[in-house]
Image (cartoon, rainbow, N blue to C red; front, side, top):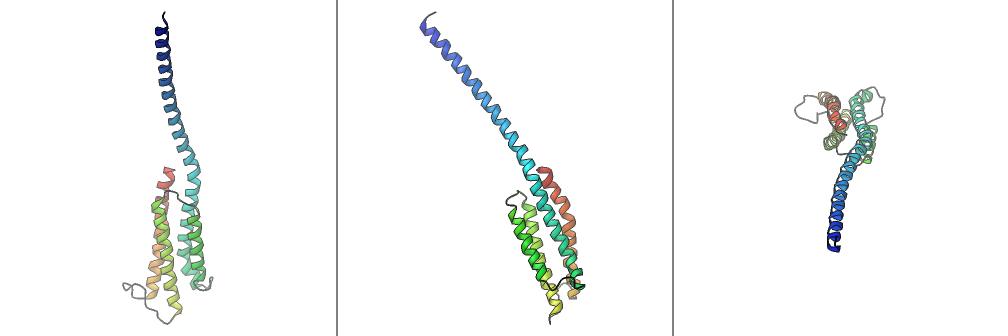
Length: 167
């Protein structure tokens, strides 16, 4: 056995060890990716559930607001706008949750609350015309807005379920 043969044998063993190390690092990388998916699942799901419940609660509050307004359980529409502002602040506090459709729905609900507020303010004002020209009375317009909130609340369950299944 010559020294050249021994050097060749040693370099072959070193190359084999390098190939095994590359393979093991690839396996470790795959395990780390799977671990990150599991961590994301368990960390993101509770926050997504809280965000969905927040949106559902706001839609339900807006659905009931007209009744509270008529029965004078609330004074004016300031409470609706305060609740809208706190809803948007709480929703934005969750940060990016990867739920684009829920974020769009939250903005639509906030805009719907403004429409409801404008319509309810008109009932106390001197201009009782409906906001939308397709309705004959302001009361019909208000009931349509409230019905829209109820429909959105009902559709949120299936929309949230798709995001909660992903997490």
